[in-house]
Image (cartoon, rainbow, N blue to C red; front, side):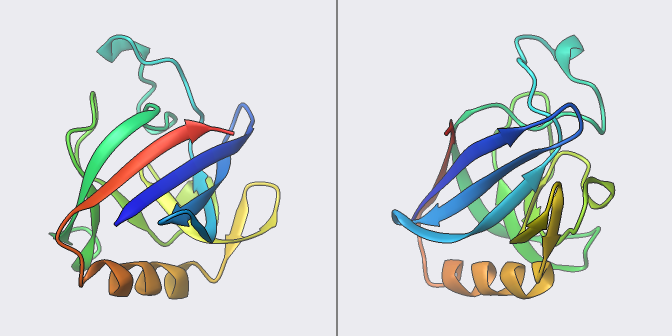
Length: 134
């Protein structure tokens, strides 16, 4: 399975984009502010999105959410990065929230979207995520 996240809305507070599964639109995304991360000190904890790039994704158990969620692996300067539900940036700390964009920096139907994403991934052996600028 090939996931592509196209970031297309950049503000000082958040980043929004669109997530595609095998080149077909799946949902909208919400992340923290996109910054250039060349060294660990470039990261502002709790206010920085992960870098553009190519990642492996696996379904793993989240102690925080107490359920299986997609984990984005080998993210430079981050650990435990996941796709999960969230409606505003108050619900994320470096992860990617999924849902339907209903306003500036706001998602709806996030839990339902997360559950559908997990269901689609369950049958996959290899999942990649590419994050690009739109």
